Image 1 (cartoon, helix red, strand yellow):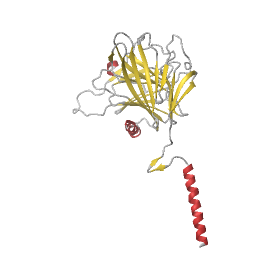
Image 2: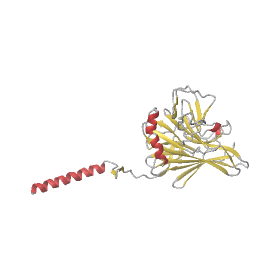
Image 3: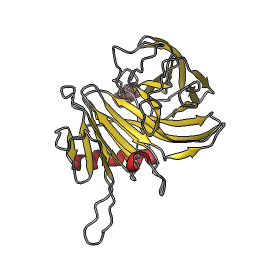
Length: 344
């Protein structure tokens, strides 16, 4: 009996030690799902890349940094402590003022159609910001060349790797202005843009055109950075190829992605049926050279009423850790489930 009691005591001790080791090992599987660490949304004033007055938002998993010394601009988006998916021009970061337009990098807001004077209005000056505990609002002063105010509202999800960006153009003129919101993400070097095409439809069941594609005068479709697939259009960013490339599509599917070093930056944005889009009907455009790749989305081209009229365009950003090959079957397998997950 004594020996049996001793065995039971030893067995109980082993179980308790084993349980303690499991509890210390990290997130547990509860009810078939891994328990997620608790997240908390934080806003912090920081110095970043030479700009002393930046705002950092984080939920403990992903983070973004917006400038207030210039802008409105978002200069960083990525996992905490990880790579920045957005490009930074090292010779321009930290600079302010002057009468020279600078690309800086990051994410910015323009208004289309593109014009050498109106589009390249400077954003080298201090902007206003407002934080309400959930949303960060970045507001530029009235552009002297256009009479338009640019504004971006940034809302970082507390529980998911998701950011909602609401882009707004406000017309302060005494006359209406025709324009479209044009949001531009300057992506870091070495990645690959993935744009979906509308589903294939066989002839003669489908007789009408379904995949609008717009090319610029300098677009070279034979450039090896392009991949014109059956289901996807892909464009690589190559730091060794300085030749400029640009193309646009009418993307009715409503998403696009940039893949870089095992991480997928997914954008979701609306297509409005019957709307008139700029640049021969594009709501998605891309430009690349040896320095970066731009992932651009556009809202409809509309007339903005005078004295305070406004238009808005929304992008939803998601970030995932996943390895995605160039083969279309791998994109189907790895990316499409993430698109569906992000849509929920």
